[in-house]
Image (cartoon, rainbow, N blue to C red):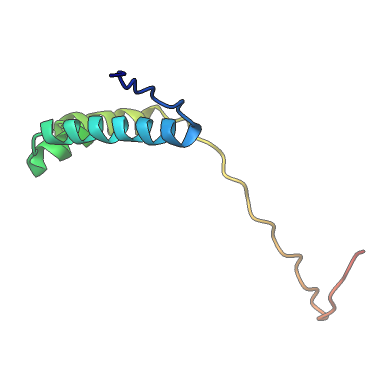
Amino acid sequence: MTAIIFLPAKENSKMRRYKRNGEYYKQRNKLKAKQKSRSVEEIWDSIFKPVDETDVLANLLVRIKDTPDVQHKQSRLRKPITQSGEVTARA
């Protein structure tokens, strides 16, 4: 009696893609199962660093005092109308 030998076929690109995607989804599902739920406060604290209000106000006052006085641009003034009511124009 002859033994039957099974030779696996070569993997084509479609099979390699399915295999790679399957491994990815397997790993992703494991990580999702490991994640623990966090409270809203923990989420906010991870996004925004908790800061003392007095430090914020002190830093703001220091920054305001340190800013140099900058001369603002003056708006263009309209040429006055002559007493006779004539308007002068230049090209």
